[in-house]
Amino acid sequence: MDFIYKAAPIGDQVIDYDEKNGIVKGYGSYFDNKDSDMDIIRKGAYQKTISENGERVKYLYQHDMMQPIGKMKELYEDDKGLVFVAEIPKTQLGNDVMELMKAGVITENSVGIMPIVKENKGDYRELREVKLYEISAVTLAANDQAKILDVKGLKNIDQVYKRYDNICKLLRKGNISNDMGYALESEILKLKTYFINATQPSEITEPVEKMVQEVDIYKYLINKL
Image (cartoon, rainbow, N blue to C red; front, top):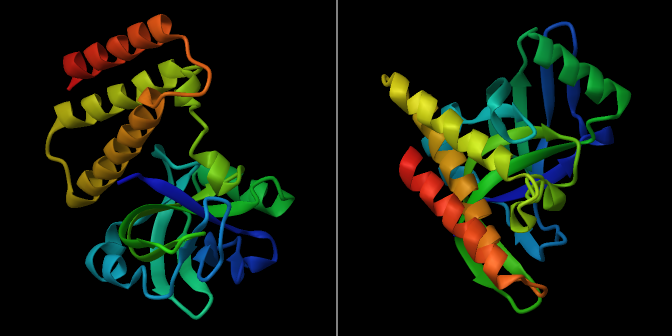
């Protein structure tokens, strides 16, 4: 199963915004809305994951585990979608993100999820249960966010290597908390999805070069993990 991203625009959908105390309340994703991936998330899809893992879900910047912004104070569903209340400490990154939201540069929140219960309805896929790993403030639309690393084109492969390096460093330190373990699970699933996408045949291929690049990635993963 792929790790996917779904967004909700910030804009006028921010329910509450308290700059002084670093609180942002808004929607992580919407229900009953067919997105450009032809997916529709139904009400109730987040209930199980909130109950089991809600306290582990963090607020990130650009879906990057190494750039946490804050933690969730509240996480629940209403009739419209997934509502979150995030507390953002006054770090440099936290302050920058709040300013970017105010300026309209960061225009969306996006959830990082794994579909659990899904059904193909013909012209769309219905998601009735998902596992939520994180919510992120993002500058790009959700469907483009998954392509940030552009792994399929292998244009930024060094960024992929760096993310594996970060995982290795964290594992070497040991004494990983439950929260960190959950974040690492999320990161590994993201990288797995990127890797699967990178190895899928495209319409225009260069077989020899592509094979060499894939072998290099595989050797790297074996050496590191």
